[in-house]
Length: 179
Image (cartoon, rainbow, N blue to C red; front, side):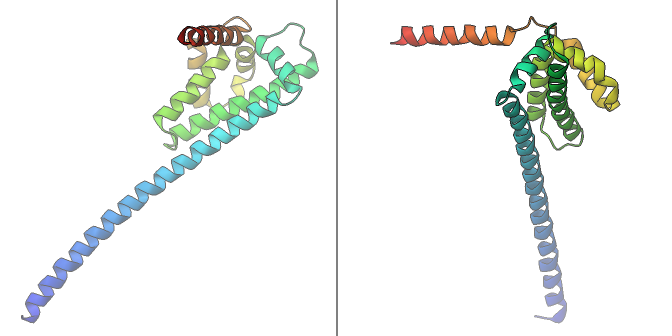
């Protein structure tokens, strides 16, 4: 085999190695992006769970309920407790929106965040708080939340609880019929 032939074979092998390296690098980048999205989703879920557990595990739950329902008897102290808790929930929605805009949150996860925001917009107190504080938010997020607000009709206070009780009753009836 001549030196020219060996040089040609070396060039082919070298070119193949470059192609394999590029494919490997692309796979690594793809996996890193998946890992990043997974981490972002996990952090969002942990943040949301933390806020909700803090509300549920303290006397904050009464203030939060009074704020959500727009209870006319809410005290100023209860309002401020509600304000800070609801503002934390709004920040989680803003965080999801921002991460979605940056391509860090999948369509499915963003749809979940939108569904959660819609549930809260069903409460007159949350809707009123949004209207009172919306100008303090980034314009793109404000437009997004305004659109969600427009899509959701305010529901009567306690509607989520009533729906839950009705569904529990139906599940019990189904279980009784099955036995």
